[in-house]
Image 1 (cartoon, rainbow, N blue to C red):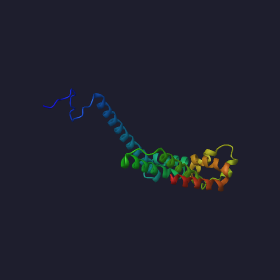
Image 2 (spheres, rainbow, N blue to C red; image 1 turned 180 degrees about the horizontal axis):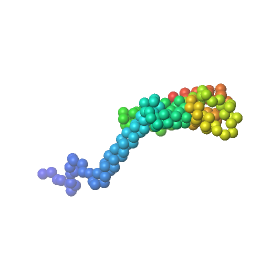
Image 3 (tube, rainbow, N blue to C red; image 1 turned 45 degrees about the horizontal axis):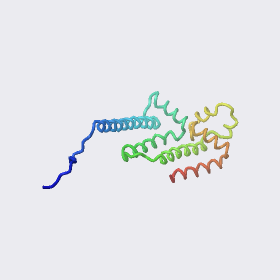
Image 4 (cartoon, rainbow, N blue to C red; image 1 turned 120 degrees about the vertical axis):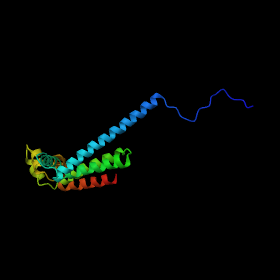
Length: 180
């Protein structure tokens, strides 16, 4: 007869402790919360797109369209579409975390593009430099180019580099963002 050692054999089935069950339920809850957040952001982006295209009327649709055009200019059409594309890529299709470098590059690219568009707005930066008050209002009411947000960034670039230098630097920065 063979001699058996004093150790017990482990059964092939793995046993889970109560802490393992809690961890699984926390993961499941976190995943469900992620899906809820994705659906909420999907609804927000769709409402913005519908307002910007004029599908949602009444008092809310045109007011939201004027607000977003004043704040972001032409980028108000692009930002929700980019948000939907990002959501679709990360949450619904890929379901893997995105590298922070990709997030930073994409957001920087949108800011740079918005600032570049602000140089082609109806408002002249040389006229804005003469204003002591109301720069935000002038950019907001123009509603073209980069709007108030990107227009102020464009005004900063205009003060530092001038119009030609700003456009050249912003185009080069866009190319850098495309590479990364």
